[in-house]
Image 1: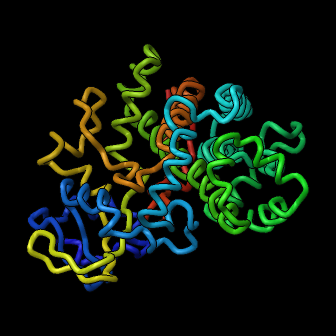
Image 2: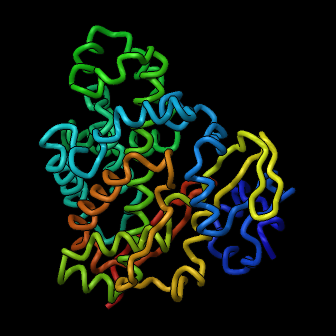
Length: 380
């Protein structure tokens, strides 16, 4: 069996993908799937080659992608990214000094709300409102995100705001009118001024480009951290030895998250379009062909990782593709790691006596995220 036998975009496959992965042969590095209508890449080195070559492979298969990041090819993309990459680097990604403390306050408020409950959906009640709220801060849009900000509300309105965050998640078109109105308002110039050198470096952007850029930042600041945090929570609850070690020593949370990225990668596949005819591994790829890089499957390769289907907190760290690679590597990867790290540190006490009573994954082909995770107290 290989990926030619399944449609990788089918919701049924997306929800059960790890079950399917276990039966996939690894004989071919790249091959065409008539069923999915694209080339399948299931080899780490070939994946790196595809993701790393922005002159040969375009990221434009993502519809509605902004023309600054995902929707821009070289050389425009390289210039745009250079202007903003330091803004999200591991050294200076906090847009304002208090943002790290803000993430802790958001998570602590949500954790405190759940502390007295014997059962709850940790994704809907904690993970999504946490990451959506921080997404507004990280994209600079907190001033227009009051209805999705769990800090900017009183206790009476908190439940409604949490529901608003869930309504918005994966339905980002709901922010469009708010964002358009904001960029046309008198507040926009002062907002752009808050970006300091970033706004100056991107002063060539028109209204629609700013719209796409800010929306991309909001989505990237919410979806990837949410997927990573949800996966981390599920593994904490199911891997009792890992939970005990983290309760005892919180300094290993970052190490834990790297293994989460491998074991349940938030990015399961990423798409590229061939720009010009080329040959890879003896296969003839034509301009316009779609290429799917199967990241989640690649991370379970026994030739790359020892006992890949085991979650191993002490695994020797190797390069991963969880944030993509090459010129379009996720610019917010350091943000995602730090938000997940803060969430695990704040919630580990809440999760330590819980078990999963119900679990459901989303059906997005690209993003592997938990949609529902009901937790209840462990039986004595």
